Image (cartoon, rainbow, N blue to C red):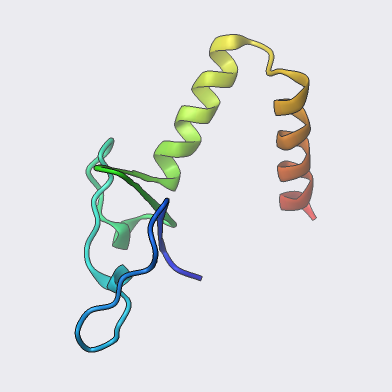
Length: 84
């Protein structure tokens, strides 16, 4: 599985046919490169590492105190699978 996930774009290949995921990509929030994090998500002009994404999700949940029923179902499904 690719360590850098590009949203809304096809995987790019260089002239040798290799995937460009091996290039360094930096998190727009913490500045760490993809070599120092579990995953990196690339969007148009912005990148976020898995650690910063988790911090953002936790902040949004705690800030609102209680997620919507739909969000709670997604969280339960995710954490239920992760624990198994």
